[in-house]
Amino acid sequence: MTEVTLSVVSTGEAAKLPACLTAIAQQRFAGRIRVVLVRNGVDDGSDALTRTIIPDASILIQNEKRGFAENHNAALRDARSEFGMVLNPDVVLSEGCVAAFVDAMKGRRNCGMAGPLMQYPDGSAQPSARRFPRVAGTIVRRTPLRRLAERTGMSSAHYLPPPDSDRMVDWMLGAVLFVRLDAWKSVGGFDEGFRPLYVEDIDLAWRMWSAGWEVWQVPAAMAVHEHQAVTDRVFFNRRTMWHARGMLRFLRKHPGALFGPERPRPA
View 1: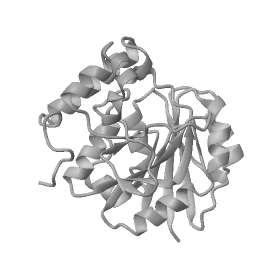
View 2: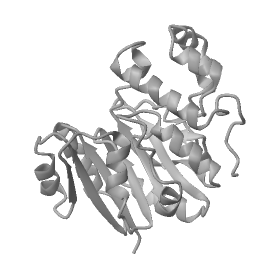
View 3: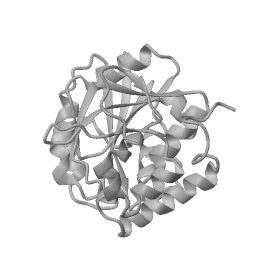
C-alpha cells in the first residue's frame, strides 16, 4: 500500500485547521495518509482539534517556536513512507489531490518534488509555479518598480501562467509540496538556516535540480490557498526583511544563481 506522510504546522492557527484537515480526511486515495501535526510553540488547542478530525494523527509539540523549515524537517525526519507532503494550514486540497500527485510521481522516476495547481479562495489562479530569480526581476519585485511591472506585464517572466498539463518548473511555492522521500532525504530536506521562513522552497528546488531530481507542477492536483502574499504587497516590514535575509542566504549558497542558466545542472 502506498503511504504518504503529510506534515502540517500550526503556529497559533487552530482556526484555519478544520477546513484543511477535513479536506485531508476526505481524500479519494487508495493508500494511507499519515498526518503529522506540528504544534509550533503556541498551545491553542491545535493538537486536540486535529485528533477530533483525524483520530490517528501524530502530534509533534514544539515547546519553543521554531522556523518553517525546522518544523517540517522534524515531521518528515523519521518517515518511512515512499512519499511526503508539506502543507500550510491555510490550504484546502481537492479530493483527488494526493492521488494525482502519487500517479504523477510513479510515472516519473526522476520527479523528486511536485506542486499543485493553486487557486485563491475566489477561484482565480494563484501563480505558485515560478522561475528561479534573476537580478533584474528581483530588483523590480522588491522595490517600487513593482508597480510598473504589474502595469506592463513584466512580472510574467517570473510567475508562470496556469498549465494545461503536467510540466517541469523551476520551483513551486512551499505552501504545498509533494516529495519523493528518497529525493528529500538525499538533499537533506529544507535548509533550517532559512528562518523563520521564506526562500527555503526556492533553495530546496535548486538543490533538487542540482542533484538530478526534477520539479513538476501537476494541475490534476488542485488546492485552494488563502495566500497572504505580504512580501508582494508591502515594500518594507518585518516579513520583507525575512525575505531579503533569505535571498542573501540563497545567494551565498548558490552565488551564480542570479546570473546562471535557467536551472542548475547536476554536478
